[in-house]
Length: 564
Image 1 (tube, rainbow, N blue to C red):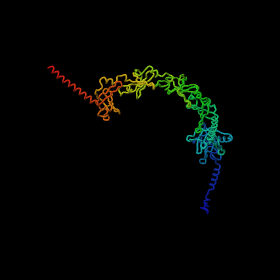
Image 2: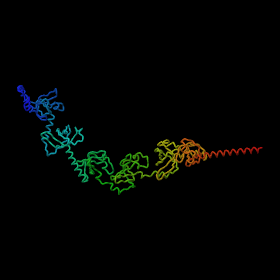
Image 3: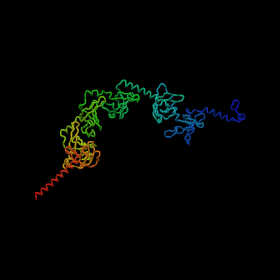
Image 4: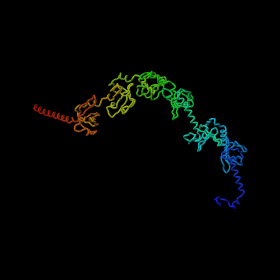
């Protein structure tokens, strides 16, 4: 029922129906609710029962309340209970279920640790903790250090990726303590920024003073060494160890060793400090220009051998490079170690000095006698020599004769045009060849195998002469004429003006035609043919045959008359 202002009121019968006993229950419930401890409260209790059936412990926490604690929370490492019935125990109320509080002993221990930390904390003393992230929530991360839980807000975490953050070790600074809320707030960001400020101060001093400082090698890698200088790590790149060039640091230094370095550069964006060992000593290249010049011969020590060459030590922290091509006059050198040994003392010639890049190249073969000069003293064009095939290429083969190599071109390997060097020889074969040319300027030697054999034209010339009519097969057409093939694979040329009625365009490759031999040049291995002369030569031959027949007939008549 509603009164005049719309407020609901009870009827008399309804009020009379109310049980006074119910009023008493409501009062007791209200009083009990006032006595309930809040979740998170630290309370002292007494163990009143241990229930094995559900692995729980009942604890009287006062105010007519019995809370439930999981049995696993008070077991030692051997699985034995560390408390018994009647023992006092400090626990934390974690919540309520059916008016019965849930309890935690482990959280109570942590809560005590937090209280102890807070009670001993002073804002005048900087506190840095080393902990592990054990959990996270919407606001940040829970960090545990020495059984004390700290809160690390996301804004103070300074993490790029938080997906795999649990279990990560962190170092942070305590920035706020809330005694009422029993919370300790820490910041990783503040510590990182402070560390950067300190690092920057140290780096600025190192770069400004440009002085030699001592540092300790923390780690050695394949590309250099990380060195601690006054609390800041810097990298000594392997190229900054010695003026000789890149050095493998593990061959020279050990981790933990103290060395002298200089700060040479700082990359603000990458926060990368570069250090140098060679900058602590005088640059030997400064004096090198006055001591040496290109063309000088010097004595060096072989310090390292690689497949592509050898490094040689000139002393005074200067190293030169001896390329594999400068080791020997032998063009087929496979590895410098076949000619050199580490720590071997050799004489070399300086062939290049780059003071800007601090690079020096030397040559060993320039000190040695040139094989070409020795060869030309004992050999000349036209000589027949023996050699060994060293390399076969698409254009021919290289033949080693003593300590030099000559080129046997494909066209000089055989009179048969279809055969190449790779068809006739293999590497390692011994062959006899003829020297057909020596180029003293380029130091090249040209060889021939076919010149040791009788040419097909020489053979052809024994049975043919100028004026003979032969059958020729068209092999190739050029701008200046037509190449034809005669018997036994002999080539000949018919120029356009000697073709007669049929032009080169009308001829087909493989077509046969009659031609007369214009000349045979056995010295230059050339034969020229003429198609136009064929008709004249045939007419002349017929006329000569006719004249011979006429003479023969008249002679017979006279002979008969004389006999009569």
